Length: 91
Image (cartoon, rainbow, N blue to C red; front, top):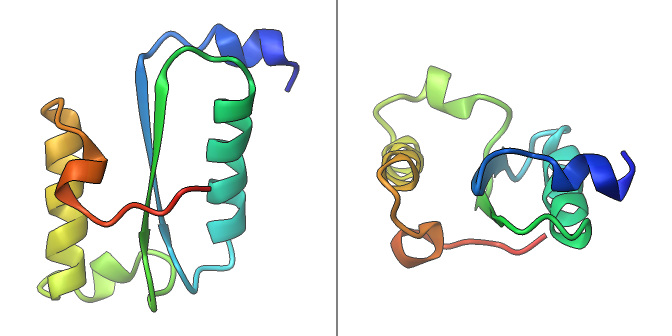
């Protein structure tokens, strides 16, 4: 997208979560990178769960990794910094 379109994104924060072994994880990382490079004034966070596949948390809802990702998501919604609550990987 042109930079002007990215800058019109009406929210102030974005959280993108990816699973390390997901074939779509590169797309999630690219989205965060493009958003950060666009001049959009908000905060883009990327949270990656290593060693897991796409929607792993649906198949393993009681796993430690799924619980951690849910914690990150809840903290993000509540306005907390993701980088303070979980390991964050930059795009």
